[in-house]
Length: 155
Image 1 (cartoon, one colour):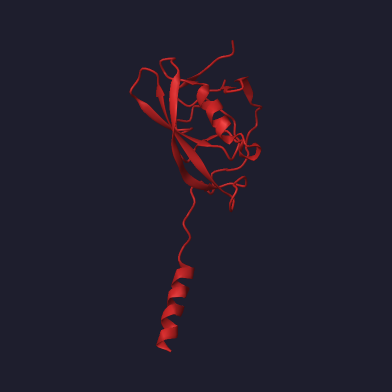
Image 2 (cartoon, rainbow, N blue to C red):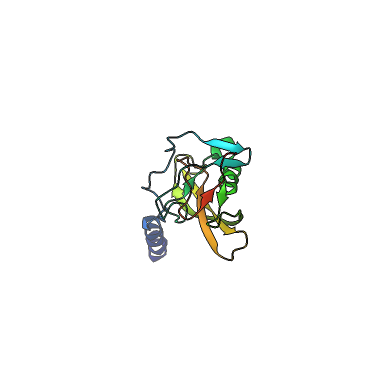
């Protein structure tokens, strides 16, 4: 009887353990874009609106929602956004994808409605300062210029 009871207790405890929580569960995930997106060229978004939210793009709880995962353009949209940015000194930015992080619930996720953010390290050319920018390629939102940065303009 003891041999049966020990595995049964283990199974009950294992099944009752809390599931890992997923970030951004209540953060308005999904498609929230209200304005059409324009391109300067195939590789660059036209960004015209400056964000006044200091967390926009810089905090994993408020990523830039470029979308595109449904049309296989997610990574392309991430680069389109990053290619549009200039640093505070009005110089081009370089960027490096630092990896994926920060699981979150989204109706656009491939597996169990979960997506991952991509984190990029961006640096203004000639500067040693590096910023982390979090991008969500699963959901769409209005695209803005993060606080302290600038964007390419239409010629």
